[in-house]
Image: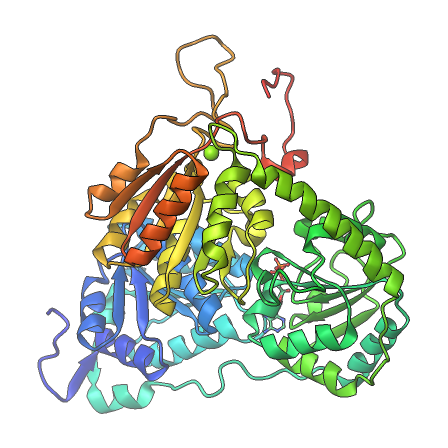
Length: 570
Ligand code: ADP
Ligand code: MG
């Protein structure tokens, strides 16, 4: 290996990076090898770090980010210079937007040439390119700074609101030598990387006072609450107060979806009618209508638990901000709560229960219908049945209709099992998240993918097969983005803009790499294929035929899609 140092008393940048990662318990790298980091990947593997090599850096970044979300340790993504670096930038920005801790470590070209723009191989001022998309971006210019550089990157990724961090390692620093003793002394083991942040007692008291006056209170659980891993305390607080709760999509399962206080099936009614809303690790962004009318009552008061003080009043006035980490904040609330202090009106609970029942019955009719070809409901109903008995399976989900409808149909019973498009509504995360979840947990994963969403990173099927990961990819093949029946409005021969190949044999893709392909054309066949695939523990892909006319343009967010004067066919 090119990284071998000539003398035992010397070390070099390659070794220092690997030693620094190991010293901090960072035991997995998700990356794509190439100049100048090929030997870094080799050396890491040789020294006991797990290296997972991808087809595309975007998936490596997504895998690192979701591993960070699941473990509270920054996921490490390794990229080559310039183009490879940029390929991972969508994943880094997505991690920052969602609050997932990850560190993208990238090799880079010769600084002197880059800065004078003299045209180096893969020339790019990477650190400055990364800055707008990262919580922090650092460059290490001397081998003796590698330890401090990684320590700063770890703290930036996991303290406060987590996010994506960029760490730039020029090729010259990787190859630079240093005497071994100085090198060893330069490394930093980060002590308490995620320090507790206790809320002020007066903020806790204020929050309880606001909640105590509520007649129709509602708790909204976000993925920040799921991330915090304070599952037992959150559940106890919800049950002790009797407040109905609503999970955001990645918080589904934090309390089981079939919990009697869950009001997910009466979402719109609960938002519109609540008089006091408690946000636990959820932002009042577009996913919650910015907290504004008509989705919300204009007179509702808000209590918000968040680690980021600037999140308060970001969209709507917050009557009782509680700034601190969620584990500490919920435990402080419980400690100060007196029995009977918070009492939601029983009429409120009854109204919600009635709405819920009504909507559950409506959903049951959708699920029971058995149209040919399958629509989203009948296919998802089949998957719901199989997963009901296997709550430990991770569910990755992206697409438009495939995402919106699966979120409503498939119940989650364990925390942090649902991984989806999240805050950005990004497509192309599915394969990376599935691989990251399978590698970080060793547990089976089912990825329910719209056919378009799957296409972005579908080549990672090879990665899944190469590492023998227990991932079942279900492609909802309706032959298009949203729907499969778009037309070319010029009358020309090219397909319409949202059309994909309806006859595509997606299952043959995985067969090319030794995995198992299935085709499903009805709910029974789909349930059987999924059951068999999960039981085998092997990589599998199910091509699932969905009616091309079943979807809605833009899924549930058609209101965000401006319309031209060109006639809509659907
Ligand atoms: P969702 O999309 O599920 O509503 P968001 O990503 O909008 O969730 O909100 C998550 C919030 O949780 C962010 O504002 C973030 O600052 C906060 N958060 C993340 N981790 C923690 C934590 N450990 N303690 C407190 N707040 C956290
Ligand atoms: Mg589709």
